[in-house]
Image (tube, rainbow, N blue to C red; front, side, top):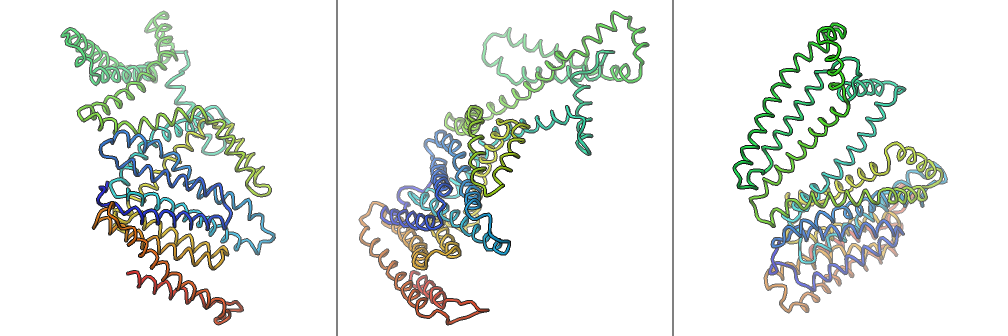
Length: 533
């Protein structure tokens, strides 16, 4: 992270933040989308905090932990500012009186949504401009931490959803097309592996599950630090003896699989009964078809695989410092915490979300949405849906941080002025789309001036911070510079307003009027940029 001597001066940073927040708030209030914009702004500030904590060098473990926990509100804010804004505006702008007005309404909705997105981006830029905490390293750490936090909730959500789908396919026999084929395949596999009919011995799959379970146990004994935790040589010999026994048991089970193929598929049951004798035949049938034994072997395989992964991860980090270990494990711990919290609040959160969307959607879309979601919830269950949604939100946060990192990596934004660059560009975008939705010309011109002011003041404050340090007495110089920038912009805007007011109709195209003042605005902005350079 950039040191104190490289941070922008306090006065310029304060001006950047105040001008950005005032302009973004004014433009958002003009389109009246309060809740999504507020949630988006909270998400933007949270993302800035995540970037800041990810850049902690001395307390890397604590910073990584906070970074992982902040990923979820970041995702919520981004989705609220985009999808939430569209849903809110659709409830206000639709239904349209006639189909002829549909294209104009769609354009209006898109422009208003982009105003919110731009305002949220501006808030993020102003937030990271405080202390200039955004650089390639902090952006990369933020993206990496968010992505690691995503793994556990997303994996669990997909497992739950996939499990419900597989259970439905397996249990239903009335699914047409490909679903019927998949259902038949699943029913056959689960029957063969876990619940074969107890009419004859089933050696092949039984010995296969047993061999895999024994392999998992043997690998666990090799991976676990049992001998390192004791100085008793007898323990080491006992572990070695158990591993040898398991090796021969695995070899025996492996050799028995070809025999099982012969007895299961080529030898008739009556002939096998006569060959083994009825008591041995019945005993072998009971053992090899027992669902409990097969289930135990299966969960031994699963538990052994999970243990090997955990032990491998711990062995990878155990030789590093405690802070490095904490930083490595923190995102996964954050993901586990989010899984626990999601499990506790899944049902009420899903119910509130469905109610809000259904009440906001226009016309008959609300009842239809409620009916569809009720069917989906009954099929998958609240936990599977909310857990998958949490994974998606975390993935959105990871994508946002990755875009920041890639943008900085391409040097489209410089590390030293990344925050003010984002804030200025986002304000310019917000003002441009605000003009489409009919925001008054004075507010529009003021927003454009604010976008240039944010960039110029931020750049000037960063340069001063590099040259004389952020603690130097430069407030008067900064205020004079900002006043000069504002004066030049104000003169250009005043000329543009005057031209637009008294020159209406100077240019006419297909019955409509193009205000000549807009041409003067463009010339004024170009002149302003030249003056600032």
